[in-house]
Length: 327
Image 1 (cartoon, rainbow, N blue to C red):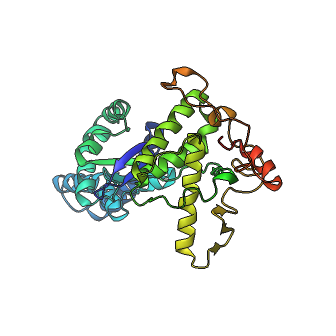
Image 2 (cartoon, helix red, strand yellow):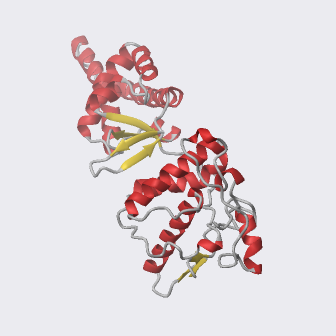
């Protein structure tokens, strides 16, 4: 995955095309160009039979340059970086900032491509693509372009695990306007992937994200609340506010904001993060697995005082999420 930054300082995550797919696209483009060149040559030979040898050679050279050099430049310019081979392989040429290429980019790529692809049979292009971290050949380096993959396999949708009911509405007064989108994305990625992390690494990452989030909101993390539970509760509070802003009546298709909880946000029953299946590893919400994390974190007690003890209807839900109310 390659992170590109646009002119508006927006980070784009694109998959650079690697050598095998690019080589296949180039072979398809060359095959198409050779077919067009052969057909054009046959037509020119028949139409220039009355000319002398020098004129016929000049016409042949002009047709070669027009088809094998000018053709790819024109196609990439008009299609914004998608030649026939690239469309077949699901590739596209873009600028370094992720925008569509223009004529000057295609001209530089095509001109240098004559040397590194046609004249050296692709040896220079292969070496440059293997050495480059993003698989770029010399034409891409000088033109400021990058070949990326457009067709990316769709993975399984990740669901955000909901916080326990005893944290419902606890962070309704937080000011979330200063939290950047990058931090929200990092919190979301952690919550959806924390089961795949090592317990010690996951605990340290949750503490760091909770500290960054608390510094942006201006309110410290409440004592006794595990950092993962804090992140989940604040994330759901943000979702609840977005729903309330989008729908004046507080309801939406597939989810309704009730008492700070969003029904339907956690996904279908049995999915990761739903109330019907355990979603939180015990090591994430009790205590760090080792004292080497850097500081001693109080272990959340399971002796729940009556003031915060869940009701009979909530007790099974609390156990399913893995969270335990603080003492």
